[in-house]
Length: 286
Image (cartoon, rainbow, N blue to C red; front, side):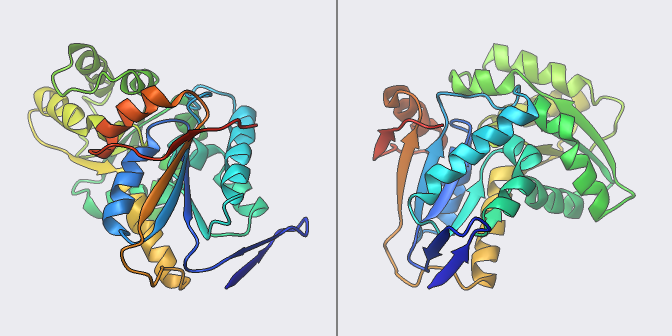
């Protein structure tokens, strides 16, 4: 049994069999859930998608911090043993505040992706696609250069990706999304990048589309880093280190909560997950 105590004196108790909380501004975090289910198949997950207030990436830092606090408090109601922030914007803007305020282990989406990119780049030229809020905090560039000061980092704000993905424009041949992807990639034509971090957990759903557009534009393949996958690997490592991995086999499950209507979530979520999303509940947040 783990006994977590907040500075306020509120006590949170958890153990190996408790669930892991995962939250995002909307559907994007489901890319992380998909990977988490593969990497940690016996764990129980509580997923909250703030679909009523998506997107976070164009909000002020103050608003993002408030929303993140709301999301975390909701998940804590389930006596979770750890939390995964499956949102690049929240990881950039609010992770430090959340880790100071809530004593349970919290994994963000930025550092794991940066470590992977720094390890895989061959020429040291890395690009980051992320939301305007994430780019505004410069968190990816700061983290990457902290890992290796010799890296060259090019950051591109991609405000149109989340609305397009949430609306279902995700097919690899979708002309609208390809047009937008090429527009963002064209900003990197002189950067000689060999590695691209998809710095928002929505973006891996169009990973193949981005890769295809990049090859058309640059004439070669580039390494693409999936922040959701890297976060899932980091979560497993953290749980192992803290002796929080469940010791029950075959008990894996996911409960889904959203802050807007569930019908559209269920339909689009099946695309993100590769399977139907069961147990979806609408809740009021904030």
